[in-house]
Image 1 (tube, rainbow, N blue to C red):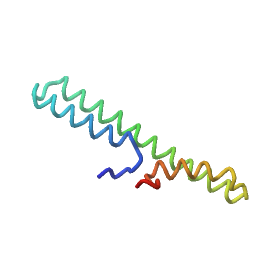
Image 2 (cartoon, rainbow, N blue to C red):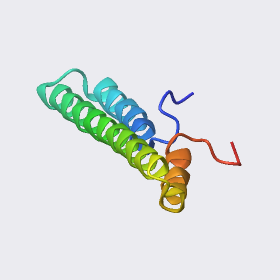
Image 3 (cartoon, rainbow, N blue to C red):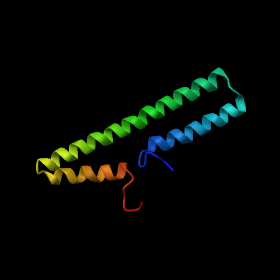
Length: 91
């Protein structure tokens, strides 16, 4: 199960890390496979964290609009937040 529901970068990170592990299994632990694994993991982790920070910013923005009585502006943002958190009607 994805612990960061709705965050595609977390899923991609897991998939790509498994691919690098397979490559490393075939090639062995070489400088290239170790560097590739580190770079890939760092890149995807950074993107996953940026996604989560953006979600936090959307929550703060929706809260601000709602507290100022501008719920019409908050609702579309809340839909994005629900999708990012995996809180859709299909789930």
